[in-house]
Image 1 (cartoon, one colour):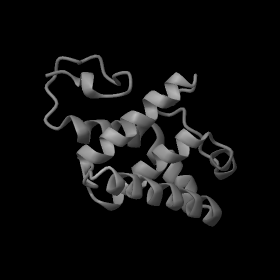
Image 2 (cartoon, one colour):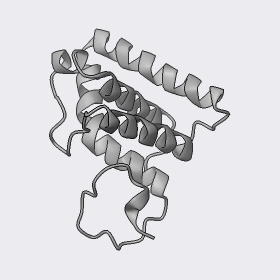
Image 3 (cartoon, one colour):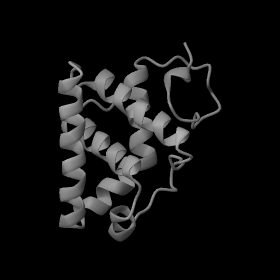
Image 4 (cartoon, one colour):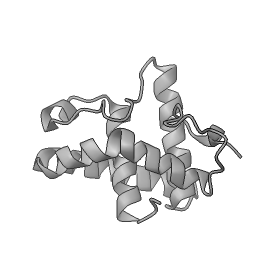
Length: 130
């Protein structure tokens, strides 16, 4: 099994290493690409934290509406759809270390980045990260 499930380009070159839980692996990669810097910025700015919390609530509501569980598989599927929609719109997901770090930059971020940050917030809160 390879990491073909992942919606992002592989971080490592060891694509032939088996992935025990592809959904958790996708969420872990998203946390590295978006979540760490975004959540750190949100914790430093109450307005940004409120905005990200609204996106997390919308993700939770979307999962309920789709009759999906708020678990690693549900969050990973939702995140994958956001990444694919962003790519169709000509937008990208940053590589590890390339996400904005300042709260002001996150406040001006594209919708898909904030929604992925909401996914990261939920993944952390639900303890579904590896």
